[in-house]
Image (cartoon, rainbow, N blue to C red; front, side):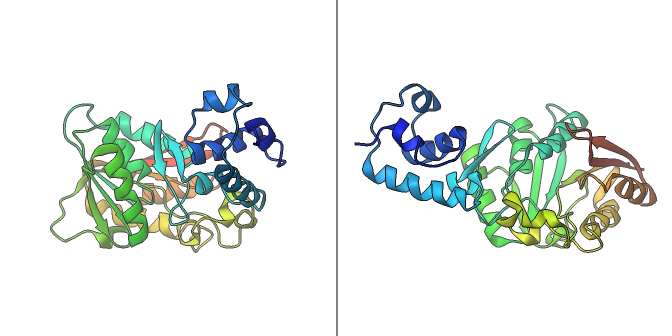
Length: 272
């Protein structure tokens, strides 16, 4: 019978990726996969592993192959219905957590929730906050609610629809609106590289060189915020100045923050 070591020698993939793929099949701990490579691999598991390795060689994202991605220490189910959560987006959560009360209630709206990573993480970190999440994709909302049930007992409010149109007229204003909207130029060469080739295009690209949805959210947010409320957005590395200017023109006191690579990545504002 083939051992783990033998299985890991079959494909020219990074060992870490192979271990993640095997773990998703067998449920073994990473300690086992690293320290006990002489263990035999069940033939059915080996066949599944070989299929996943070939798909990875063809470029499919590890997160879609394993069915999960860690975000802010939580394991989120992901599949091609939603974007794969990325470390850069954790900066939005970090920022949001510094703005609202640690214990008391706060009204938060996440627009375009996808897998639910931002909204659910905020609920996990701040159980007293009332968090509403929207998405125009019914499939994405179904996956987000699945994640919410697993991670926070689904204690969120969900609405289906495009941006603010998902809300009802009776929805009271929010203390914080947060989003990671599409911001890639449709002509960007990055769309034909790496994981982006497999992710939902509607969640990636926006017209006007990637600025259309960002501008829409900035212009519409004041009607849905309390005075002194906050708007936090993730954007492309070359869109910080444009977002900062748009927020200032919409009545916000704006600030742009950089990611770990020193690139403009997040712009937030306080509505005056």
